[in-house]
Length: 191
Image 1 (cartoon, rainbow, N blue to C red):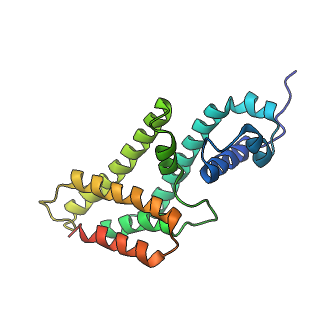
Image 2 (tube, rainbow, N blue to C red):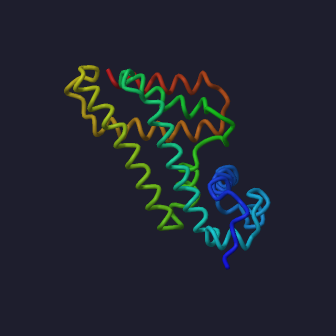
Image 3 (tube, rainbow, N blue to C red):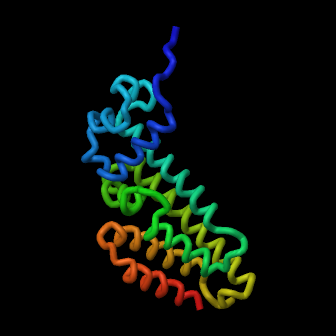
């Protein structure tokens, strides 16, 4: 007869995500995961697989959590500039106690050149964010907020690049004024 799990799988995955976010993939050992998740090593392997498989699941969980946050912060009553400002502000003013920066960007820097599966996941996530920005800008053009002659495909790539950059800067500075200036400069590109 199979034993019932003695832990909450979703909570354990959240903890794994948090630890990978704090330390990165390479610096996180299986023992670190056992200690932080509060789950026996054998149970981690039985439930999540090896460290790499757990990391991919934690990264996927992070993307899902961020998608929900993005969608809950971008409401129909916002202008496109307000919506894009909200995306940037989520980075520099996190809603809860979370590690600095972004797990996706951290992972891109740490592992994309070394791990094809991770690189594909990062590319997929970046495309998703660019598409969100493109859709916002397209809506802004349709509403007359963004000038019709603007290349919104190029603009979505430009803003996404800045969003990635500010995620890195948010790890290295607590100067919110500096980060707000970067947001203002990006929004000024919208006309």
